[in-house]
Length: 143
Image (cartoon, rainbow, N blue to C red):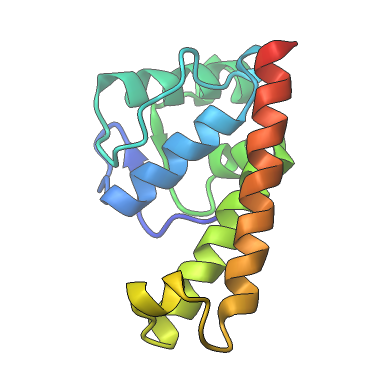
C-alpha cells in the first residue's frame, strides 16, 4: 500500500494517506509495534496517530531513525506493509480495487444494491475479502 504525501509530524497529512497509515498501524500486531489501542481511522493525524508512528519507528527502525513522519517510499512504510496482517492488507487492496472500478464505471448505489454491471465480480471479491477478514478478527479476539 502506498501513500502520496507525508504523514505524521510536520507532514502534509492528506486524509486519505492518514487513513491508510492508521489502517496499517492497526493491522500490525501490537507486539510488533502496531497501534495499541487501535487507532480510530478518521484521516486526522492527531496526537494518538503521531505517537503510534513514533512507537512503530522506534521499535522497528531504531530510535535514531524515528522522526514521527512517514514519507512515500520511506523505510517506515515498507516495514508497515511487511508486518501488516495479510488479511487486513488484502481487504484494503480489494476495497481500493472496488472503489477504483466503481469510479471508472460511474457506479451508482442503486446498481450496487441490485448487483448490476460487469463490475459485480469486483464487488463479490471485496465481499469475500471482507468476510475472511471479519472471521480472522473474531478468532484473534477470542484467542
